Length: 283
Image (cartoon, rainbow, N blue to C red; front, side):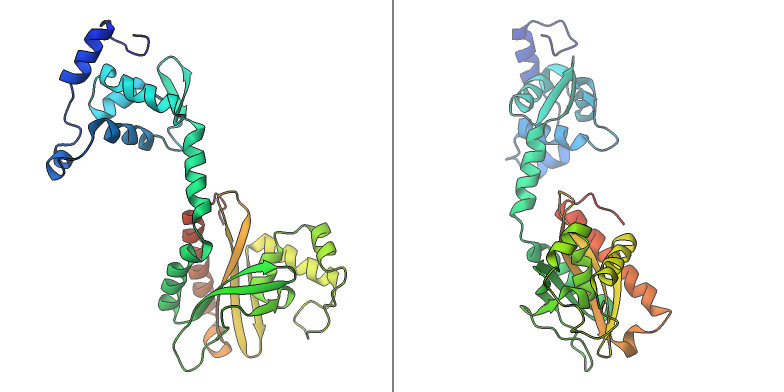
């Protein structure tokens, strides 16, 4: 057989595959008699690949699973035929395109709110501050989720609220997805000076603020006795899909020692969400 390092005939290989089945996992098999050994091995083979192990051989599969090459052969052939493995040389494989397709289909099927909500709830509990999720629609940031901090003084922006992007921390993060031409096109018929400073009063000032937000990966904004810190969320394609923030009254946010800790907690929360969304974007 071309895929085996042994010199057995096809019939002998089949026999070996039947009679030489090693214990795939003594603990697993004892815990559940319904485990399908071939399926178990096939999934374990896919799990062997990583960023540091992009190419593996049938010997690698056999050694790690404690199986013979002939026992592995049919599984590898099936995975290759289905597109989960790609043969790049004799007995040598990398992950096939079907793995990526299946993974992206799953990620795309998950609603962003479903992914983000438990993380924002945890962030609220960790910081005792309100947390929000928003997306951009035109020049507005639309609030999709709120983890409300139940305390006497807190920021309470209802779900469904709209705020102009240029006046809010989350809004300016959302605008970082646009280049200068896109920003110019979006705001060509929109007045920016209807809101007082520190909101940008004109397009050049807005572009400068967006460049700063894009560079540092977060925005801090103060208005109406409240302070907010925001950062972005990215999906499996690397595209900006939303923004999250921490917000609270100035009295709770203006502590110079606490503010960096709050910013760190927000960025750490975003990293966990991005990981769950499948993003390769890292800050």
